[in-house]
Image (cartoon, rainbow, N blue to C red):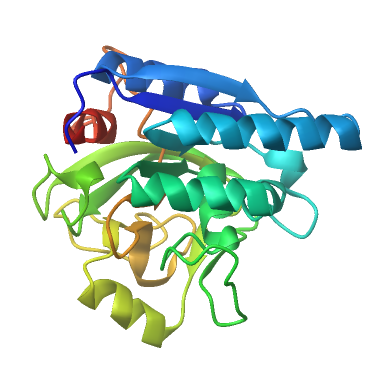
Length: 268
C-alpha cells in the first residue's frame, strides 16, 4: 500500500486506559501521525456520540491501536470486555472491516490484546464470532499482578508488524498485567503454529520457548505472548513494546527495542 502522507494512527482511550501517551509517542517517533480519542461513557448519549465519532476516525485512519491499561477495572467478567463490546458495535465493526479491506493495520497491547481476543478479531479476524472453544486471556498462574522485564523470542515474521525481525531473535520486553495467561486448545494452537500466527513466545536465555515460571511468568499455554491474524494485519501481544527509550532500564541486558511501530509505518 503506497501512501506519500504519514500514516494516521487512531488511539481510542477507554476508562482505565493508561498507556496511550507511550503508544502515541512510539508511533510518532516511527514517523506516524496520531490522534488520541477519548471514549466518553458518562451516559447513553455520550456513549452513542463516542461510537459515531470513533467509527468516523477509524474510517480516516491507517492504523487502529488499542493501548494497555485496565478498561472498566477489568470488569464485568474479566479484562477487555468493555472494549470488546465497543468493537462489536455494528457501526464500529463496519468501520473495522473497511479498515482491513483498505489494508489498514490493527494493534492491541496488553488490555488491547485482551479486547482483540475477546471481540473475535484474534486469532482469526472474525469479529463477533467467539465460541466456548475460542482462545482467551485468563488470570496469571500466581493470581497476582505481574510487573517485570521478560524475554520473548520471535516465532514468526508473517506480518507487516514483524518484517524487520528474524525468527529466533530475542527481545527484553516489559510486562504489566493481572490477566495475561493465553489459554488455547491443542487443536487451535496447532492451527496457529501451522499458519505462522504465533508472533512471540516467552523464552529462556537461549531463546527456547519455556513454560518455566521464571521465563513464562503468567503461565501462557505454549508460551504464547503474541499472535497475528491469518492475514498478518492484526497483532496482539501482552508485552509493552511501547515502553522503550534510551537509558530507560538499568541493569537489563540484551535487545530492549522491539520496534513493531517502525515496521508498521514502513508498511505504508
